[in-house]
Length: 101
Length: 164
Image (tube, rainbow over all chains, first blue to last red; front, side, top):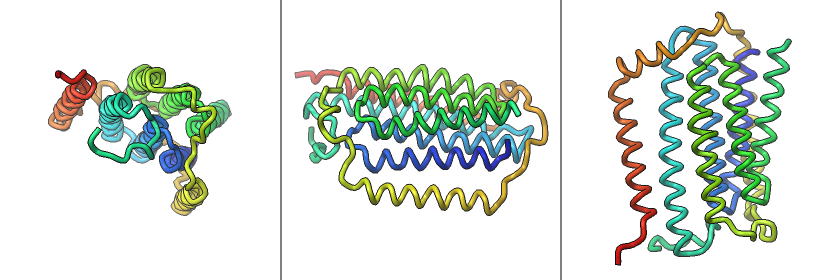
């Protein structure tokens, strides 16, 4: 397996996630698509680290930071979704047109 | 040969599950597909020889984030997913944009011909990662824990009932 294979896989995954972010009406679906895009970036980091810099681990460290930040992002995002859902009774983003809940 | 078979199986699982996340109308099925896709990405990490990331991916993503999203789907979901349209009206420009992006990305990858094979066998990474985390990268590591604490506090703040 060469580096190109992994890069192609991550490109396809990122494109699918981008399509989900652009077209999903459901806000939870948008959050899930963002997770797909972050995972595509993680595959790139690990693959470049493995093939271009064997013996160094900064890429792995970056992936750990990204995973942690994704967890934080999803926790805050879902808490916000629940808070908005309690007020508006809707999970579709076109209903979210006021800042004051 | 075994390596190729495993890689293409994992790639097929990841791609199909990601398409399921994006295209399935019922949110519950999307969340289950997300768990499958994240597990496939963990398999890719394992095939790249990064053992700690593999474990972290399973623990945090499959065991944490996917389950959290499932909970929210159960709490905030409704049965309207099957009846109402789940894709907005701009799907054709979005499809064109994503197709353009994917095509350009694959052209770039092919142009720079990253056709190199791994130069050495994978080694255990945990000891080196711990050295980095507590050595050169100690400050970002501590900053990450502050971010986690802040996000946890924010989630509690948003989630609690209003004191009236």
